[in-house]
Image (cartoon, rainbow over all chains, first blue to last red; front, side):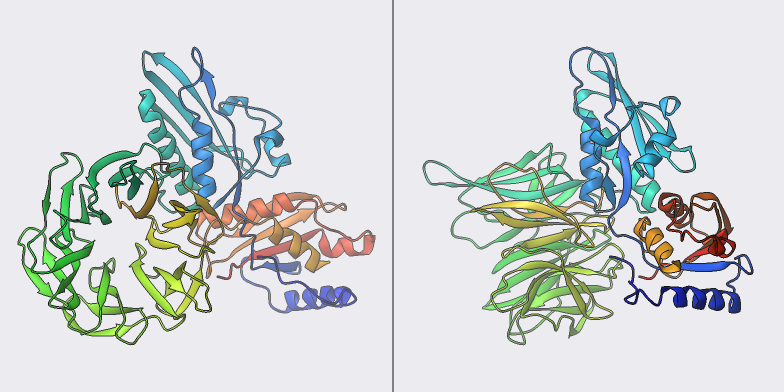
Length: 448
Length: 87
C-alpha cells in the first residue's frame, strides 16, 4: 500500500549522501550520468484517478439515461479507478474543444471522460464520448453511437469497456451478462424459482424460466453465451437433472437420462462437453458428458463425495471438491482421468472452485475455521497461497468475470440472498442492485 | 530528502496494473521550489501504460519536497527517476 518508510529521521542526510554515492557508482542504463537516481518500486493501489463529467443532454425533457452514472459505477466497481467527485470539478465540458486541461490537473485527474447525448428523432439518440489524457493533453479515444432509449445502458457499458481497456490494457467485461436464481415465497407458501439473466451490473433482469416448488440450481453459461445449463427437477419424485436451455428461443431439454441424479454442470472451454456430478448407487463422482453425442465418461471413482467440477481454461484439467480426506478440499484431475491431486491445504474447508480465464488463479469458497464461516478466496496453485477477499459468513458461488478482473458471488444481507461483486484484488466490494427476492448462484457469461 | 521525494512520487503513482519486471527511466528538471519543469523519458519500459502512469506520477507530485538550503539545489536541479514496479 504505502511505500517503505525510513524510521530514522536523523539518518536522512546520511541516506541522501549514500544514495548520491550509490547512484554515482552504479548508473542504470538510460539515465543521466552524475545525477541523483531515485528508484520507485511501489505505487498506490487506490486506482487511477479519473474524472467523468455528466454527459450533456441536447433534447427535450429529461435525458433517457444517466450515462455518466452507469460508466462511473462500472469503473468504480472494477477497483481499478478512483472516480473523482463531480463537486470538485471546476468546469463541465462535454467535448474536447471545451476542455481546459489545467482544471483537471489541479484536481489530479489523470484521465477525463466527457460526452453528450443528443435526441435525433423519436426514440433515436446519438451518444458521443471522449477519453482525454490530462497530462499529455490529447484525445485517447473518441467514439459515437446511435441507439434507442433501451439500448443506452448497453452503450454506457461499451464506453466503460473501452475506457477500461485504454487505461489498463485489459479487455473490459462490463458489456456482458450474468445469470442467477431468484426465489420468492408466495402467500400460499409456494416457493417460486426464477432463472434470470441480467447485465453485468444486475440491471435489465429478464426471467427465462419459472418453476414452483421445484428448485433451480447451478446455472452455467456455454462459452458462446447461447446456452445455459442448470439443475432442475421434472417433478417431486425424480432426482435432480441437468437441463440445457437456448437463451434466444427458450427451448430446453434434459442433457441425458440418469439412474440417479445429475448436478453441478460445467462447460468445457470448447463447449463440446459438460462435466457433471452424478450420484448413483450411493456414490457421487465426476463424469464428462459429450453434449451432442450424449456419451458419458466417468472421471473419478472414489467412495467419498466428488462434486463441483470446473475446467482449466486450456481444457486439460478439472478441479473439483472432495471430502476424501475428511473435510472438503479442492482436487485436480486430468481430463483423461487418473489420480487426483490435492490442491488446497490451508483452511478448514475449501469448495466451489473455478479458474480465472488465464488459469493462474482459482476462486473458491473458503472456511478458515474457528467459526469464521464462509468467505470468497483466491487460491494460487503455484504457491499454495489463498487470499481471502470478502468478510461475510455465508459467501458462496464465486464466478470470475470473463477478463479475470472481478468476481461475482452470492452473499447474505439480513435474511435475503444478494449478489455482490469484488475486484480481484479484494479492494472494492459492492452489492449489485438485484431486487427479485432471495437471490443466489450467479454465473458470469464469457461473451455477450 | 531523497526519501521524501521518493515517498511523494510513490503516493502519486496509481499503478494501472501489474507491470513487475519492467522499468522506465526519466530525467527530471526542477526549479528551486521543487516545481517540476520538465520530464524527459530516457528509457521506455516498452509499455505505454506504465510509461504514462509513471510520468503522470512525477507531474502530480510537483512541487517535490525540497530543502530550503541553496547548497542542495546543485544536487537536485536535475535527477533521474527509475520506476521499477515490484509485484
